[in-house]
Image (cartoon, rainbow, N blue to C red; front, side):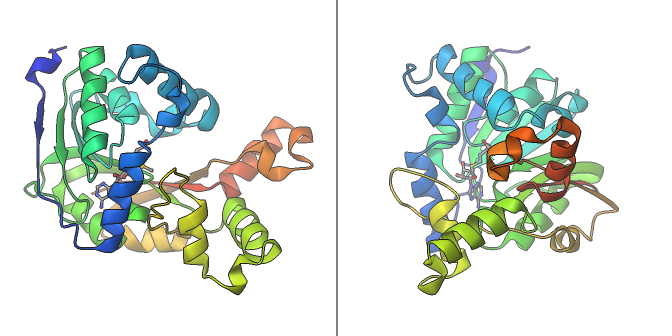
Length: 283
Ligand SMILES: C[S@@+](CC[C@H](N)C(=O)[O-])C[C@H]1O[C@@H](n2cnc3c(N)ncnc32)[C@H](O)[C@@H]1O
């Protein structure tokens, strides 16, 4: 592995922040870098700090992730992550032997991701940029990855077109979007907050999602959207192949029966009604 001294950080494309939602996204993730609350109490930027974020993500928050994403499948390939946040997943791809580029709208995310690579002595390229307007030539990457990002940008379909454009023919996209036909959407957001707490009487479901899905100290209220499998397939229709996997459900969401369900039934429910729609598409 080459050392971080060779890594680069650049403003890949000056993002257009005239859109209110893009500014809100920046505010949200500047104040609350993704996953960083799992490292409360550790010195910022230390190895312990990053290990706490990583441990929480793959052991508590989404234990299915390493298996479903396949971080080791891109050895020797060039991989772009759009919305890399603090670089947790990007680091796994780099450890798996991919040549990685991390891009994010929020300068603070890039600063943290870069620091993370430095701590582990891994090489990566980093830049500030916008998913809707990638400053890379056509067919630049073997793989494009984006987890929990494109549903926060106003023109999600446009961002998917950009993913397609920068992929080489035969290249692979892995994109996670929030899943509308999920327990979290219908039971948590629509029923609990919308009807039980009567929020739908004075605000829209879009407002509820913006308030409730991404928590933060600064109340930035970023844009949050969710998609059905059919809507996701529609956005990825230019790709030659598209597989959709659903996951991310907690036993807590299935209260009062969650703790009693056998593992195999719980897994089947997660695969049907989980909150994450993982789209794996080939150009
Ligand atoms: C929920 S975090 C996810 C971060 C990371 N993928 C993860 O799973 O830990 C969303 C990230 O997307 C970034 N983001 C939001 N809109 C974006 C856009 N239009 N272009 C690039 N990044 C964006 C935010 O700055 C933030 O770092």
